[in-house]
Length: 464
Ligand code: GLU
Image (tube, rainbow, N blue to C red; front, side, top):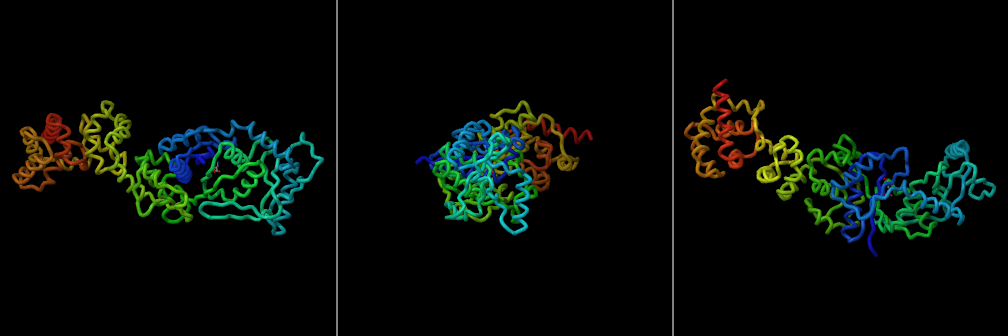
C-alpha cells in the first residue's frame, strides 16, 4: 500500500503555526513512507474563502519547503462530483431531503434544550414521502440510530460514540452548497488518502465521517488527531506569544529549516535530540511518537534553533537567502562579495536580519557613525586611529594574527587598553560600536578601503 497524506486548509485567513505543523506532520509521514502528499484547498465556504489566503498558504508551504505531489485541488471546482455523490446517497435511501423551516428547527431545538436533552435533529423528514424536491430543501445523511460508531485514532486507540448522540447532519444546503463533513470524505476517498492527520478540533467530526465512508461504499483512512498548540504559559497560542502567521517568522529572519525543526518538536520527539536536519526528520518521523498532550510553542527555543541552523547552513545558501535584502540597500552588492563576509557573520548572528545588517560594513560607501560609535571618534581617540593607519599602511600580511600582534604593540605604546584602540577603528570602519571582529573586517575590506575609512574618520575629528 502506498501511503497518501494530505493537507486540507480552509483559505479563510493566514496559515498559523498549528496549521503549518499539521501540514508538516502530513508531509513528513508521506516522505518517511515514500508516499504521496496532496494539497487540497477546502474553499466550499464561499463567503469566508479568499484568494489572498490561498496565496498566503501556498507561499507559507513553499517557504517551509513542504512540496506537494498533487494539487492544489480546489473544492470549489469539484461541485459536479459532490452533487453526483449526493444523488447517489438519495437514490440508495441513505440520505433524504429535509423541508423543515428554520423556525420549525429552532422551536424543536428550544424544546430539547428546555428538557435538558441533546439538541440533535428530530428526524422529522427522515421517513417522509410527500416532499416536493422543487421546494426549498436541504439534504441530510441518515445516521444509524442505535448502536455505536467507532474508529481507531493512532494516538487514542479505539474511540467510540453512541449513535443516538449523532445527528442526521446536513450534507447539502438549500442553496446547493455542500458541507465540510461530506466533501472531506468524498475527496479523501476519491484521492486515495490513506492517512488523515489533522487537528483534534476535528475529533468530533470523525464519527460522522466514518458513517459517510460506509454509506458511500468507501474504506475509511487511518486517523491521527494532533493536539493543539499552547504558549509557554500553557494558554492557547495567540498573538501574545509572538506572531500567528507562519510567514511573519520568515520576515523576522528565521530560517525555514529552524522553523521546520521547531514545528516538528511541537508534539513530536526522537530521544532527547533537539536539532534536526530536514533529512533526519524524514528519516525518524513516525506517527506513534506524536504526543497526546498539548504541544508548546516557545519563541526563545525557536531563536536558539535558528542560531544552530544558521551555523549549519552552507555559506552559499545563506548568501542566497540574504542577498535580496542586502541588494535592496546596496544595489552594487553581489553574491560573491556576500559569500566572503558570511563566514564572519554566521557564527554570531541569531537571524537572517542580523546577517543582512552585519554585512552593511562591507558595502557601505559613506560611513555615518551612530551615537554609540561617535563616542569613540573624539580627539582622545586620534592617536589610536593614526597608529592604526600606520599599521595598515605598512603591514605586509593583513590577516587576523598579524594585525592582532601589531595592534597589541600599538596599545602598549599608547599605554591604552586593547579596547580603547580597537573601538575607534571599529567606529571608523563601520559607523557602529558593535560589528564583526575588527581584524577580520580589515582583512576583508583590504588595505585601500580600510585606509580610506580610517583617514576619513581621522580628518573629521581634526576638522571638528
Ligand atoms: N479544511 C479543514 C480545516 O482547515 C480540514 C480538516 C481536515 O483536515 O479534515 O480545518
